[in-house]
Image (cartoon, rainbow, N blue to C red; front, top):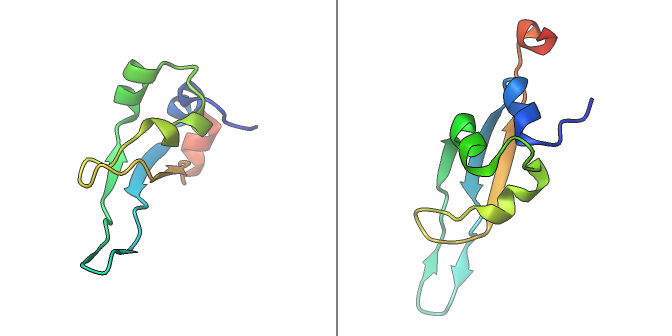
Length: 87
């Protein structure tokens, strides 16, 4: 069974983590790197995006709060225990 929407992921108990992918950048004067990472609240995502919002579009809607980069990676973590998988 493929999970394609926020509503499906929420119903199955998935967790979502976003991390900034703004890599090292050399401009001859300085180098910087952002490694900000944050767990996202699925309930808030449902309230703001809706149950039918596709998981594949979530990355394009996020921005790093620390550096402002739109280069964000979203990691989806399905539940690991067998009881959650049976729901």
